[in-house]
Amino acid sequence: MYILGLSAFYHDSAACLIKSGDIIAAAQEERFTRIKHEPSFPKHAILYCLKEAGITPEQIEQVVFYEKPFIKFERLLETYLAFAPKGLISFTQAIPKWVKDRLFQKTKLCQELALVLGDEVNWKQRLLFSEHHLSHAASAFYPSPFERAAVLTLDGVGEWTTTSVAIGHGKHLKVIKEIKFPHSLGLLYSAFTYYTGFKVNSGEYKLMGLAPYGQPCYTDIIQEKLVHIAPDGSFQLNMDYFNFATGLTMTNARFHRLFGGPPRIPESALTQREMDLAASIQKVIEKILVRLARNIAEETGERHLCLAGGVALNCVANGILLRENIFEQIWIQPAAGDAGGALGAALSAWYLHHHGERLIREPDDKLGDLMKGAYLGPEFSDQEIETELRACGAVFTKLTDDELLEQVSGALANEKVVGWMQGRMEFGPRALGARSILADPRSPYMQKQLNLKIKYRESFRPFAPSVLREELEQWFEHKSDSPYMLFVAEIKAKQRLAITEQEQALFGLEKLNVPRSSIPAVTHVDYSARLHTVHNETNPLFHALITKFKEKTAYPLLINTSFNVRGEPIVCTPTDAFKCFMGTELDLLSIGHYLLHKQDQDPFLQLSHEQSYALD
Image (cartoon, rainbow, N blue to C red; front, side):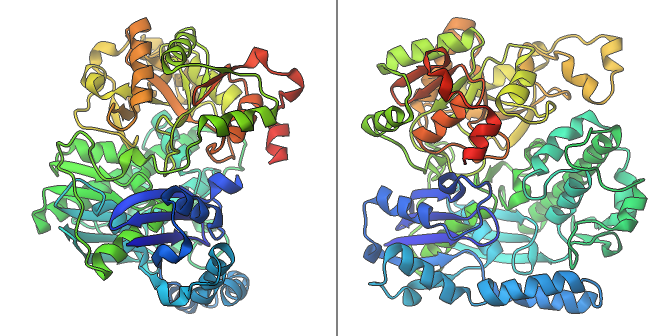
């Protein structure tokens, strides 16, 4: 049975296709349209999924949307009524959009499906609706390696729910506890994202990365004024300080007075206030998450925990939770945000509606979980790659695998920066060695160079190390797998460098220029790193590249950041990769068996980043 799962119309639209519980394909629509966080109906992602499976539309037996629009509309109306007369402007803007485009989504979905897949099928008869947090929970539990587990989902808001606890056992999954809107951990964190001058729904990563530069001096104020935290981890926001329920902004004047002024203007200079606010809200989030987890373990007796929802992408908090040893094992859905809801919707239909048999891998299985390394997106044959590169006017060389590994590892060892596009594209927000920019972690200058000259983003943003799984414990204080880059751990003491008293006294972004370990380019200012463990079973070519780099340098790891620049989605096609290559200061580009050197390319094709972005 083929089931198509969809998420759409808010942000991070996606499609996923499963076959009797087996995940065949999944992709975000943004990768095809090149619009970051694309919200529209995922027509390109759907067509890709069918192409990957080699099936016709008639073979899709069920289409499942990831949430229930009518319940969401009910929440919208009740919220405006509860806060009236506040929010009149927001109300008059929101309601017409709902009535026109969102309220009758069953009709709209059927129309869109007919346009994309044809009207030979009666899509209305095949369409189901899941619930938002059930979709998240299903995406976390069913692909996990656990026969049974507690499932914690945390995000901004679904229909009404912002936080939920479920119990999964075999093919059964049941939500047992919920926290309702407006009390939301995701919206609390997004309020601080907004206040510190970053974009909501995309700047939360920046807030997390900024936190180690500050001091958590506002934690008491946050807990006294903004959020009440119960001993069991449940929480309640003081809505006197927030504007997101009915307004057009996340915070209000009372919030601004509490922290000494208006929100930071986006792109303006960062001050110590923003760094301290980031450190403070991060500590509060960690405290709530740990309390929730302890209570779940005590009440359910479960030994394993699964996580999903946008808050589950906070890898710093995940690392804290793992080190608390509340659960024996923790597994996190790599596409934890709304894109992953498409996967969860399909899986919930298979197991809960059709009562399908559960597929499961044992925790010690070398292949791990059922996500297949999250490599679920498009890949391209040599012929397809060569055709696109020729159309772009590229100059390239075709190599064997051994030649490619030798040349790329040699370039990396000589501090060249490489665009690496190999195999199937990753599903989720992280680049995991399929659509990655790679560099040498030994260089003390590489972090700033990558941020300013390649990624065109803030200099403080940290980079992740991709490390051979078998070498992990020699370099990091971490023992379990981290195949999806969702845990932060500390650098081993033996790899750290001594810091002078003068360097220890530095404040804020001054800390950035102090090398702190033998791998300074992936060591954050608090000696932490966001880990990506590389497994030969799921990505043999990337594993072989790092192995070859180790042979040359004795270092079994590389810098790995997503193959894109600020404001753009991760690359999908060879053409996307070539454009990014020519619009940045990347030195080499590796696509399949093809290798491109920047100095060989036509200089008239070397667009500036601004020119490249404008063409999109």
